[in-house]
Length: 241
Picture 1 (tube, rainbow, N blue to C red):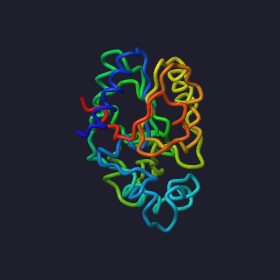
Picture 2: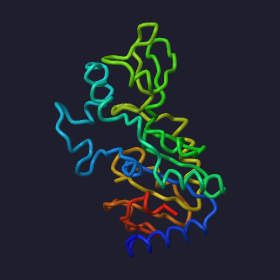
Picture 3: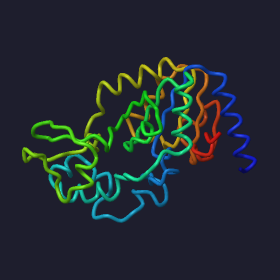
Picture 4: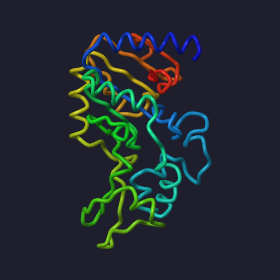
């Protein structure tokens, strides 16, 4: 462990110890240490060559017009069924069980927080583990996508689609309301692994009224100047204690 990582980790632990109602707000960078690439950094999904930009290929209009190509991209670049929770996921579950973390608000769709044991997880962008038929509404697990080829079909003949928020689609109102309620009532918020450029999720932090905003992200963000604590260390390593 480097000296800087050790110092940053100790400071974050002290802040966590001093607060009682902590909300964790995480993005793609939380899962990179589990082997899931993020979208915008070098080597991420957005950095690769595809016929169209990834934000187009996972848009509602592209899904409707080119479902077979959508699923080819989705299976290849959006689903990582073998990924396992890292130290950050595990520590958050531990802190929730200890009554310190009141909720995890995540932009990720991988389900790793639940796999690690977190109970109050608000998934702003949905989950790859939930899928449904657009025709009859029947629910399916991840295997309906991973064990099928081409366009996954329901027994009724309808298309099975992921219960994820595609580009051009709004967030779920109930999830948004629940997330804002948690953020408003938190005395500390830990923001990690997110560039804070995807709206409306990035705007949720404006509702935080607590006394400690801790930011752990490898690059600068729009809230660096207003944060009480900033670290450029990997969030998994920061919470590995």
